Image (cartoon, rainbow, N blue to C red; front, side, top):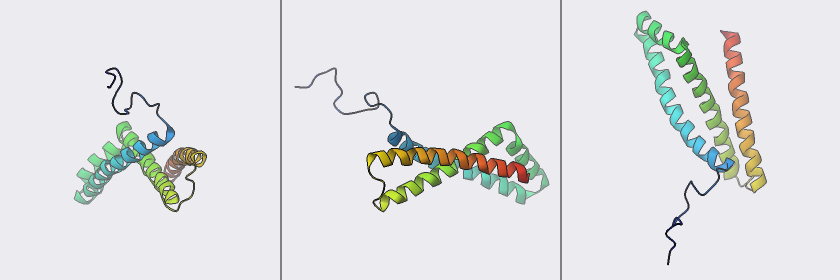
Length: 128
């Protein structure tokens, strides 16, 4: 009855990635990234409380290229997760559920996340 060359259920090799699926997966990934990044921030705060040597070690890592890259990624994850969460709250009220508005909302989430990340780092660099 079934054709051996066709899969029995849909899978990722059949479907082309769409903004809706990519953003849904990204929302979950950024949530995980926020949890990991929060552990990094807790380590930094504990190092500050532990004394000057511990803080110098943590600050050295956070100020390194890799540390700054992690902080930049954490900042993007924070803003992306926040914007995607607002988008979900809007959907929960019953608004913007039509397909064109869903796609527009997705692009707004991406653009706003990038813009807020850059703005955050500009402000941080000015304040530094």
